[in-house]
Length: 354
Image (cartoon, rainbow, N blue to C red; front, side, top):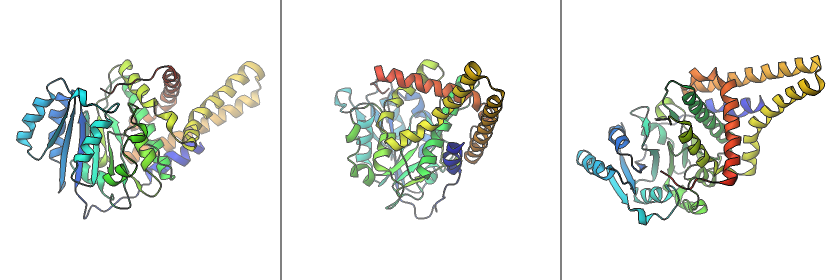
């Protein structure tokens, strides 16, 4: 209950910034074998309502028709800048080398990152995500959700992304920014080069978003973006195997978080197991009616407070209100999946970014 009130609810109370006198923005997109997505995404970005921006596409060793698609789209959008990387030129794990080249090529101080399978939720996405960035505010954390489809897996994926966002929004609001998502993240080149880019974790396939934020962000230079117009939406995985592979890759960076962050992120699953563990222990060992009543009251109060916090956040972000009602079921599944993947990654870590 403390965690929900302390970190979930504050995410709904975010300062807005004036759009006047905004600087130019370089939108950077790294793509590998994304020919179909690029056909849709590039027009959505190039037609954004923003005075001065450039789009940089880094074709990261694609072997499909991505290069031909980009060549054709450059005829329609001559201002689009394309960088091609050959497979034998890859110098870092994952997409960090591609991102580094894109950031170095950016002609504007502010860079806005997204992925090929993402779509801006509005024509003012660039404006909303970058307003407020400048000399003092260097990093903007945005939200990127997933499209809604029928089925339990889709609900689980959307709930997982929603809770992850509430965690990094809430902790950043409390002065402890520790991650963002590369699908919707903005920062200044100054912040990037001040910490040496991805040098501290270049050997890891992941970490171009969360570990970068961990290194570069602090309570003074980080702002949150939660308005619907600042959000992007992505195509979710359709199979359990692909989603769990993505989760395993993300889990490779969690051990590198600061101790205070890991302790706070442990509160939610730890309290879940303690409460249900107490209930099971009472059932099997003590079976005292007064303990049953106390635990039932604690459980109901926990779910009530958590529901209020989740629903208020979903309403503020204008997302995922249809699945908040299912959170008692979804949270159990998410917690067990996290434990399973964390143990799996202790044995074997995914290395490739595709």
